[in-house]
Image 1 (cartoon, helix red, strand yellow):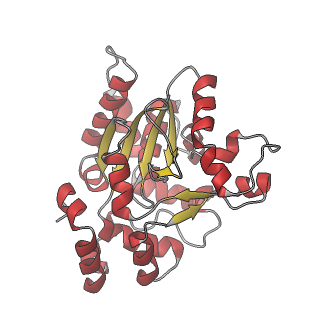
Image 2: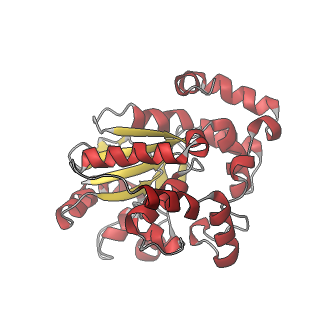
Image 3: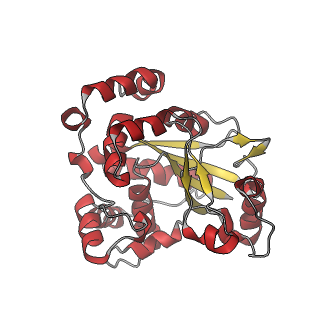
Length: 282
């Protein structure tokens, strides 16, 4: 079955993938972005033959569950996949369900810090980003493989920040959730990784598996923000998709209290007050 690493964009998904890919898949070498290939983005078109009838994103949506069923039938172990997709039902079609998904590591971040990070990454205004964060019909374009294969710009449905969070953390499919706050990961990566490790251990029914303390220490060192930023500067990072800005930009220095104009932080606090209170952000 599939274990998701899900998040709203710019919430720390890549950092969590880096931690997991190094701990579980490295051979104790220096971290490289190639390790992230062990936890790929879930892109429907990657699993469809080029002769499949795909003419629109409605066809992509119809393929969500069939593709997951194919993945689960082909691999005889649980697999990790990244997604920014909302855990939604669209025209009666579920993004996923309990039969296909063993669990989800959901990474959440204070939306007042997301907006400042997202603004830089997309090279847009605060007005543009806040409009997207409030829009329940927001989407992301998928990678170029969908266009190359089928001639359409595939999309990931992300909706608003609040709806995205609720769709996974309070999902109706009864998919087990491990909630990771980006801020807690910054504060104590060791503790949060152990939380994820124990979640995966339970899902995989590995009663006797114990954490390797030395490996975990090295994992945290190898995937520190400074290391990831330096690696991007020296080797590039394909997942930023030709954007002229750094993917790893500010890290912990991205503090909304010092950067974000109050008129935008106030709008976010009003719009997302319920979820932010639930998460302890307000």
